[in-house]
Length: 267
Image (cartoon, rainbow, N blue to C red; front, top):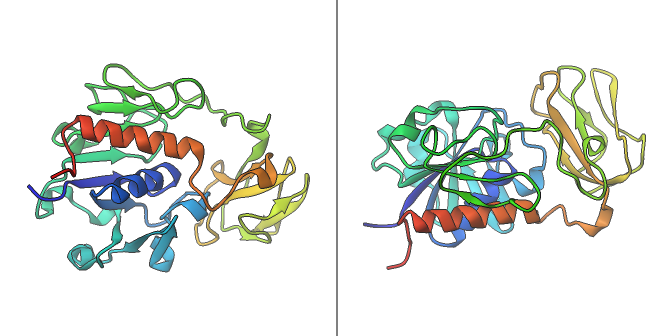
């Protein structure tokens, strides 16, 4: 039967963690992402390969396959990353055994391929029997990483999860459309009320002190109202170069679900 093929839609934090876990355990992965990714925790995501051609997360490399024909030429030991608008799953030389939808759209979604190919949906907007076969809970708390075989994931609350005693103040959203000119880097420790960068000469200011764990790519022209930065109040207690505890829990739940569905790499 060969190595099982898995499509991971979304190369942000959760999709990248899933890709790393499944790749390390022997699955063939194709990552699918927007041409201008909106991921902010870019030291632990593969999304920047859309701009630079390649990205590494915890020793695993993804390479942009552009055009899609380069999928067959992706070097051994690398994950191909494909632009969402270019990939027609039904034109591949074989169908994937499962699709992981890690786009975190946070609303009801009904991709056409989910009716044909078993789909595992991550986070809000997924209900088994409607738009996925299996759903994974992504909300922090006792149910984080639970595999849902019958039912729905928690609805989007609009509030970031609580970390180090902070929730909404640790996340910065865009107030002005345009590219952000950052004056700091992911991994720096910021002070409260520090200017982190500028959008069209308008400052982006931190609301709390802590380690900068996420910054949207300056290559992305952002609309108003999206997440552009993340300050972790726990500071140097966390390692911004490693996949988070939350993302690891979700990725391992996906691996468990994939194995239960019968897609094992064991010979």
